[in-house]
Amino acid sequence: MKKLILTSLLAVFAATGANAAINDNPLYRPDQGRFYSVTALESSSRPTVANQKGSSAFALSEAFGYGVTDRLAIGLETTASTADWFDENSWDTFGIGLNYRVFDGVNWKADVFGSYGFGGVWPYGETFLGEENTNYVWTVGAKIGYETASWAVAGHVAFDYYNSESFNWDEEGFHSLRAGVDAFFAMNMQWSLVLGAEYNADLDYWENNNGFWTGKLGVNYNIDDAKYIGAYVGKEMRHIAKGEWDIADGFAYGVKFGVEF
Image 1 (cartoon, rainbow, N blue to C red):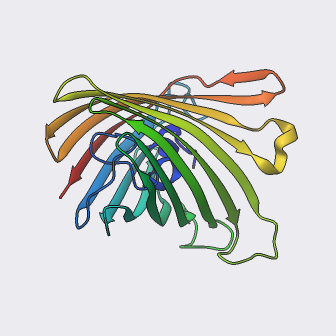
Image 2 (image 1 turned 180 degrees about the horizontal axis):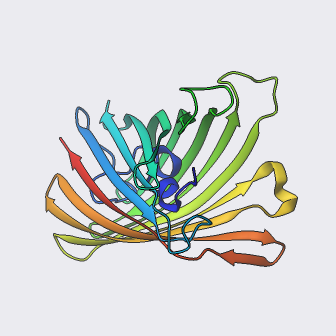
Image 3 (image 1 turned 120 degrees about the vertical axis):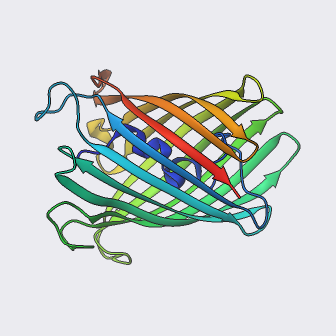
């Protein structure tokens, strides 16, 4: 099933470690003993071979986490999707991870994170965790950012290793490197803007210029101090050759609900 643009931007470990809740401040983290949940519904207006007016695929994702201490958070994320108006359903991803704040200054913050997960958990028409359809992903990364009372900016870098088995170190596997930046601006007590961009580089075929950019722009509304809703649009641009880029037709779009308790 075609991967949606926003899926990688909204996934809890793929881009932001344990910092993906409560109004999308990229430097947010739950306090000790607090839980968070972020549920997102995403789709895309990008034309496909089957549907030239836009995709009929939707993805539902859930990111859930807990503050073990004020510096250490654990979490999990999972994504399921449907296509052709619920005729083709699949369980796409599942992952668990850790996020640790190594530096917690007044304004400057720095985190390290790592995760382990599955891709292609139960694709449509395939077997559950089947050898032919499932890949296993290890991720390590770091993030550094600056935060004030009304805005925050954070950059991240992450290394992903994919293989056909969890500990199949004898096989070379696949490797990718992601780097990006996320920004948050509170316009007032209720409304805020979020922006983000990330470049994903294929390290195994670097000479083929297979990397791509994804970007998002969103607006959030605080229901109260511990709940928010948000809406987002995303765009993709692929590096097809040296000095040549292809901007994807259509947009990815999504809505979110986040809560801390």
